Amino acid sequence: MVQNRRDFLKTSGLLAGSVILPGFTNKLFDEKIIEKKMSGKIKFRYRPYTLELKHVFTVATNSRSTTPIVLTEIEYDGIIGYGEASMPPYLGESHQTVLDFLSKVNFDKYENIFELETILSDIDSIAPGNPAAKASIDIALHDLIGKLMNQPWYNIWGLNKEKTPYTSFTIGIDKPDVVRKKVKEAEEYKILKVKLGRDNDKEMIETIRSVTDKPITVDANQGWTDKQFALDMIHWLNEKNVLFVEQPMPKTQIEDLQWLTQHSPLPTIGDESVQRLSDVIKAKEIFSGINIKLMKSTGMREAYKMIMLARALGMKVMLGCMTETSCAISAAAQLSPLVDWADLDGALLINNDVYEGTKIIDGKVVLSSLAGIGIRKI
Ligand SMILES: [Mg+2]
Image 1: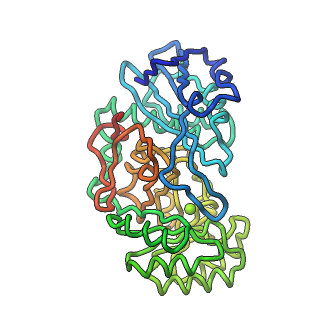
Image 2 (image 1 turned 30 degrees about the vertical axis):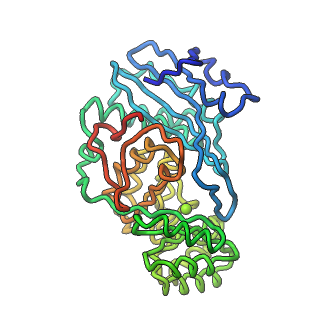
Image 3 (image 1 turned 120 degrees about the horizontal axis):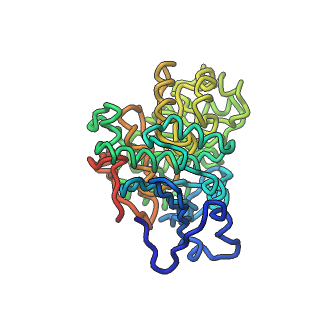
């Protein structure tokens, strides 16, 4: 149970969203725990928190050194399920939007906590959007139910825990000497991920190639806007032991993306273009595969459905993440024996994790055998 001796705050459900006032420093903000009293057996707690990144993180569209998250706990009969929402600012959710959403959640009407299909579809209908807030409920419920069943989710889903993929490790955009240093520090990882889509793309790849031949995955984060330029880049990358290219062009340029995929010598993977289950069918016409993230998909249940649908459509599947604690990373990792590629380095990039669970050992995703999503508090 989350205990915070300095500032434990209990409120009614109606007040919960209004407890945190603007003007607090992050430090104070992070200390508030909100507990919603439910009339039944369920207790629901959540707390805003700020992840500190080890390195300033730069992609095609922005740079930052922290990520706001909200940690959730759903307690039933003394068993606690842990969940998490991670809200990188460019996606539009924030501490406040997640707290507002969670203040509207009510578990009182459910007699059977195992009814994930009913409960999660009700949660989804509270308001459109809010995928990270929804994921924080989905993950906590999965953790709780796995613990009530005394099984990790890879067992409940019937997966072989040895069949987890290697994760890529992201090398951020930087000056050549810094990039070379970062590549050397990433010795343990078998696959490197590079964020492109700026004016020094070839320099980044050549800098990495000056120190290692490891396979690279490329994420352009919608950074190339001309389809012929994008195709020329992909042909060039294809000669450099690159495995695939994620979101080469803006999600609005649907016909260009379609053309690019038809001509591309490398698989193209939709990320910004693909949020939820209904996007998978549309993605079939545009990409070779999809990048599923729990913070886009609203959690594990819909992510599982997306993987099944993508497979039925003959698509490649990648599992990605935001900067997250080992909570959301371990939740995603439960699905990882089902996917082609994983990019689950989110918890490796932060200084202040609060859980331990899934580990990355010699670059491979290694699942813990604990029940639920397989985590414990540090
Ligand atoms: Mg991406």
